[in-house]
Length: 355
Image (tube, rainbow, N blue to C red; front, side, top):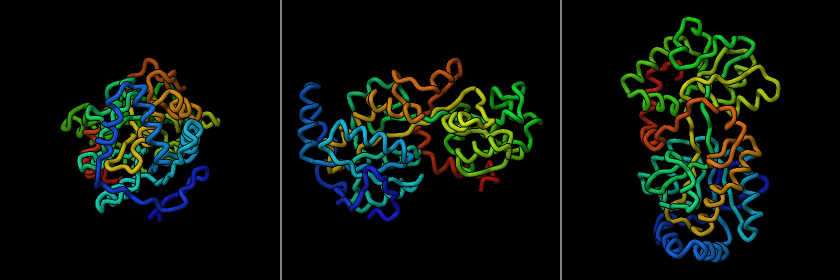
């Protein structure tokens, strides 16, 4: 069943898990029965139900070190629960979830994914509503109004430039700065930068946004797959600038002494990673405990300890300090997710070199 998964050593998924599918009582109805009492009684009922369930099945595409740290911390808090985790690479998690749900054998109780395309599965009835009591702490844009998803981790999308090749005077402050003749042939871009593309169109409007992107394409861009790779190539001097990459990658490589830094180009877009409860989850109480935990300050501090940017507004990270005074914006992730396939197609039309 898990033919393509990469097993995490500290919580090995060593056997196939029988999927609950989408039949029978929904996760929503089970959780609503728990949510009706006062908060203290709610937690007691969740704990009783989770003890009976004994495990929680998680699908994720988070990097291994951070995933290990979060799940190990959860196990210390709830030692009576056994997380069974399948880790997928990139967008392969979407195909697995969709295929299992289609035949009524979705094994996962909780899904963690930064892939925007997975949001289309909300409209297909794969995800259940779950309004964690902790979601009220989070600002608008970090959760959807219906309760289908919560953001638990944030990536900040930034341009990265070589500090050896680019002077401070040339560092771009806005997107239009990249259209100057100076940058022609010197920039690289991710061949699947669909989210950033969608965010620009969303902010500027499709017509104006496409004109901006067409002007960017006229700059003889180079393309590579993967933001971390792009950051490494800029640090190595292969390119002067990467149009967009992850801030945590830039900071991590710079901390090792590499000549790379980020440009405070206005605005910088935030990209969330999502938490979902699945419809028909076999272990809904344990799943609710896990989602609540991942949204808690305790878990969010684990992210900080591993150089990731938390979504919790009260938990600060090094990125928080660096971004002071810089305009950041959270796009409508659900809108971009629903249009993700169309945005990808349009991206390749505008940037034929990315094919």
